[in-house]
Length: 386
Image (cartoon, rainbow, N blue to C red):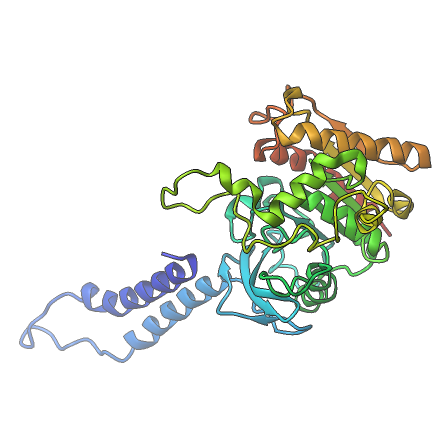
């Protein structure tokens, strides 16, 4: 049963029990031996218990949010008061989209307090409705809000060049930065200056985090990339190939016969390799849009931004995507060094000593440890910001 229904069922059960309790607790007595107890006082007691049950249920419910900024909520939020998912529609991106919001434990008890925000961007083929994206370090955060917006199975955190594909409207950057962000600020008690707002992500979301921080340095004072697609240049054609594979569904040939479960390499309606950034092929500079979006080439735009980079090495196995992610992380590091920009770089290699479930691959076990290391540092940076 969904959590919201479960809470309502528990509240209803408590109310029913409150109604039955006075009857069960009243000793049986004959009219001859004693007068019947007055019934009137029982009703207020039952009403009080019902009210208390309703308050408890409301206290564990997600806070109400108001539509706006082009977003319309679909149905009720699901989850708890501090970890919940809202579903919205927007003309900017086809289809309904989920947004997971994580609030600090004291959010409801501190109506006078405003909180910094981390926008956490997921990887390809994922969705914020997946509770696994609420990594333990994020749910344990004591002093910040985390927002995990839908980035699509392969939205690539940008407004696509081609808006007339089978996928429909795909204006992901506009959706996130001009709709989700002000929607969150209008509905929650956030700190709205750049020093108290961060953007981070993993894999596809690592590219998205760098891309957003570079496009809008006025919005984000901190950026995090974990196992990110940090380089789209011709120096990292494997990364370009991975992006193209998500667009063209090239990997579906590896899925084999269906066992009733969706193929993890099917990213939605098949579209052209040119749909997001134009042609990826480096012929007579035809791929200039890919180069223009390359985070390494644009690293200078992060001059006044706190930068953190995490990567494993895929156990030096080219079949592991982390092997290639490490290459993009190293290229970003080299570029930051050349520019003389400060940053924090964590290369944990094969994962030895990096959490109990990290073996250096492109896996959640490593990302969970990345966040366990990063979140306390981010909270400290937020606290130190004026």
